[in-house]
Length: 448
Image 1 (cartoon, rainbow, N blue to C red):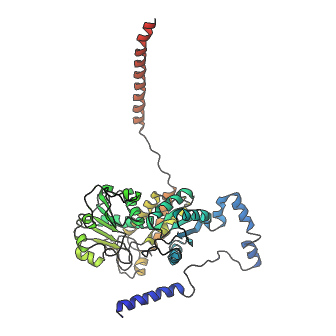
Image 2 (cartoon, rainbow, N blue to C red):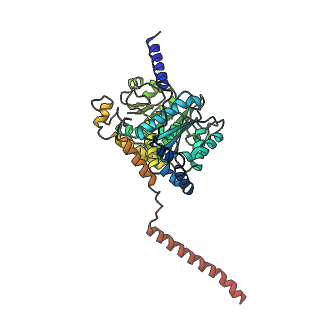
Image 3 (cartoon, one colour):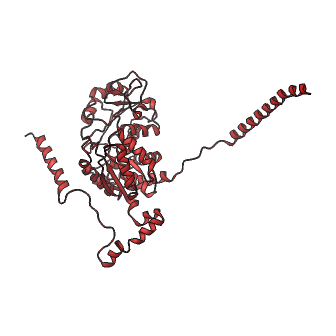
């Protein structure tokens, strides 16, 4: 047996043992109140528990005062898109959902119930989530295949009064945007002028382009590529989400799209990008090959093709890891703290700027120690903060919470403009009135 095979088997055994021992699974429930005496018991349950019940019945908002609702998120899946493993069903997704719960707790102190739903249609899934929503302060949708994930999230955001967030869409988009803004800055380029190619038209790809455009990228400078090639206006097989990025172009293949591109975002599959494609990109390109565990192109191959590029992957064994843990725990922390009813685009953009800004600041000694590094500074190999940067827990939630509480500005009109408009309208009315009188005058004369 080869060394690689032995290493793979050892890693498999280690992962299975981690999940099985000393007791199965990664989550458990613990009491936040003492319950060691008769009095404790009478307060925790009957008769004492009746008092908060009555208060909540009178005023539902007090559920945030007397229960864990305000710090409790549901991590919910139907198991149709588990990591890069595909549709393996809801039960098989449970280890991932538990893992998500661990990250919520570890990085943002948020409690989680993982929920795996056996639903045959998006409508069934939506009804289940709507029915259990009163328990939670927020809903994190996870590992739901496109395009159903778009329909599910849109329906739940409309019907529920708590934040609903599909991390595979928006969590990924936030980290990609933060990293790309910084990478382009290092390369002397801007989001507004960059030519961007996105390979992968699922949840992450569409959401990332949506957020990039909201932050200043031009649709006319973006090309979306799916498994059938460039998404163009001549195709008749596009869903509504892909149609939004269909271009009038003669380009048809990924190789065509990559020629002259400033940035590549891959959220697709392994080994789909060749060194020749990277060579064809514009000067000082940015390559985000984010397929896991194997990227669209390995950093070694990409850098051998172009020494002037900035490279990011989804892996922790290379610099510039695009890791969703930089986003979702802190975005939810900010949303829960602000008692937000939705996670808005403005809140996502606030998270992007907070993450991007943090990476440009001096790196604390605690981070260097955690990663066993002598030094680390903003540049080609450091465009995003590290997950164990303690500043994340304050900086990102605060930015998100602030964005949640800012009311959209009402459109203002210049007073001079208003005055001129009113004057013109008044003059027009007078002119019209005079014309009307002039038209009536001959008639009146004849009648006389």
